[in-house]
Image 1 (cartoon, rainbow, N blue to C red):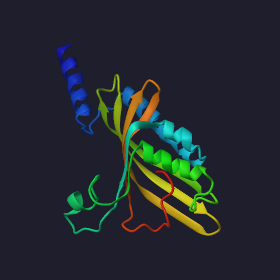
Image 2: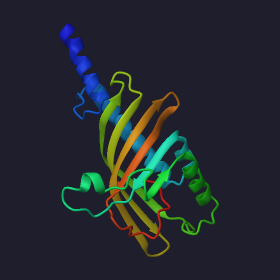
Image 3: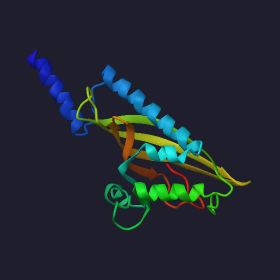
Image 4: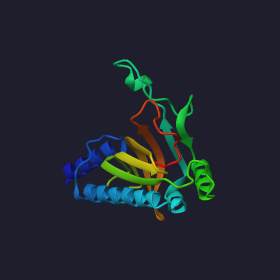
Length: 200
């Protein structure tokens, strides 16, 4: 019995400290399925332009960050490839207020880059839970990574594809799951699109 308690404590410690070796229990797979469903619902909200409902699944203290990626020499990518939050430039370094203002601007119907509206499809894959706090039995916060492909088409001939990764902190609350932090790593050094009016 003591050995079982020690093993459970070991798993809880591994998940709480962000160790990717989370024990693949039925609870883990249920949680992973819930995370995938959460992302699919989020994609539907964005693709269907239900932006107010999307704001509701963001925590009030959300950090929404997309660094600019640099071309760096071999061996320097870990330290220099991505700009740092709060330092220098980034594509996005936003909070709930700025995200809501962007939504307000689009919903006026006179946004210069969204009139006419874009047609957008989000695809999410490779969802992995990297850490669970405090533990799998009663999780309150998850560290989740995923890959995304975002397709945008507007007017007659403007078509853009965005591919990248997301590192999220998801908070599980009584009112539902909330995105508390999102880091978006776009796999481009130079932005090929005319603007970034979409949400990732």
